[in-house]
Length: 82
Image 1: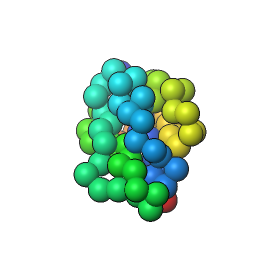
Image 2: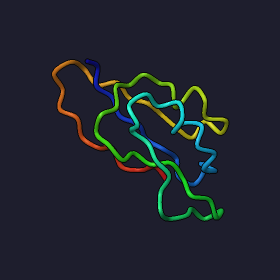
Image 3: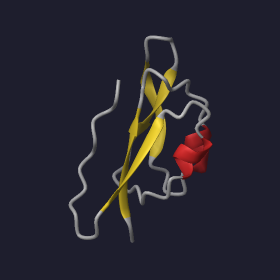
Image 4: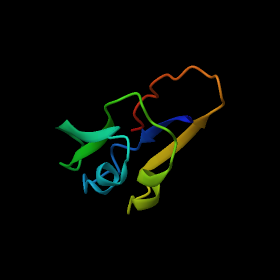
């Protein structure tokens, strides 16, 4: 299975939850905290991203960047983008 990870621009995200619904792996969820605009933002909550890009495709604010990892590469959780 492919490995991937996502980076979410937390200050751009408005918490619409479209990415959460689009993720077949249930990798994303809304954060408990809010950003500077007052929105709860999406965040990576599980280390099972396959890099399918569904989340980035449905994001109306282009706040999500998906990275696909080379086969055999170790997965590490990327820091949240500001």
